[in-house]
Image 1 (cartoon, helix red, strand yellow):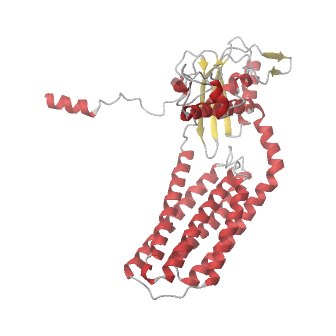
Image 2: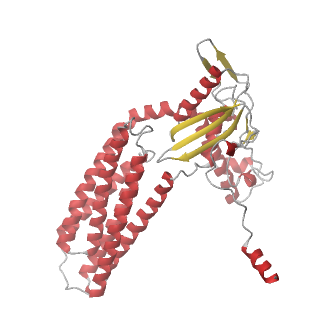
Image 3: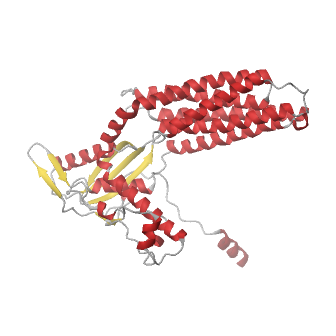
Length: 435
């Protein structure tokens, strides 16, 4: 993927419409790949370093401070409709976010370490508190399901058991990933977390299918004898739901951290599933005419669990097969690379593909062929380390070239055979009838 002489920072599907003369919007400037006047190289005998302006393209000047609806109406009086003004507001909101992301890219690693020191205790509390509540919820759900004989509560108990297992899996895989074996696993074992999630999803879908089968059998058998409604187990389930709600609010405040975000979604789903199961159990047990609500509720919960975890498995599967990073992230890589050193003339290639939860990055830079090996090595190595400091990067590889006229696909063994595009089916049918 060769970069053009100028690479636009803004990448938005509606950019053409948003930057049309009718709207009067001014996007942030493009990134030239020629040396920057604001970057001054410092060369010495032992090292090659770079002192550069923190904002070489003056991106801060393109930030829109006041993007309220009232301010935008004043600045764009020709836009009468609120819907159009909101589109303009969304444009500037995304542009400001892009500028902040680009300007903070040089300090992401230090910011991540500092943030971990400040909020590490809160994250650990969220993890251990969630695991403890999941264990208690499982015990309560099993007690309530056995006491009442409700299939809906058995379904919620199965969900609670899976939550408990998932918490254990996350703790184990996190510990394994944090202790790499350089001899056996040279690039670490971070991807074991993704593998563990996929295996857990397979187990969860199997349990859901079994619950659907048992609930269908209960529906086929017809109504059971009317049982008395037991209050104690149902109250216990209510207490568990309240505990989940408290933890949901706590994890919601820490949702920018991946682990807390996962627990936040887990608590949210548990609140919905357990509340629904509790209502179905009470109504189906108390009212004989609607006895079918209990097994029907169990089927609904099992289907919800099945589709939820199947979609999660499908999502994480792509993380292992090397799916390309979003275009916004690739733009960020180009910005970091082109502003790293003035001796980098162009960016020939910028790739990023998933390798677990994070990305592997490949960047090809263009430098003058007159540069010494020492200079090209030091520039590429420092850029490589800077790229690995980005929060979403697991590993980075930087290659140096002296021209951008070659075919980038000739640099590696072809991964697949290039075939001629097939003729559209309607044209093939037309040719067949002509004969």
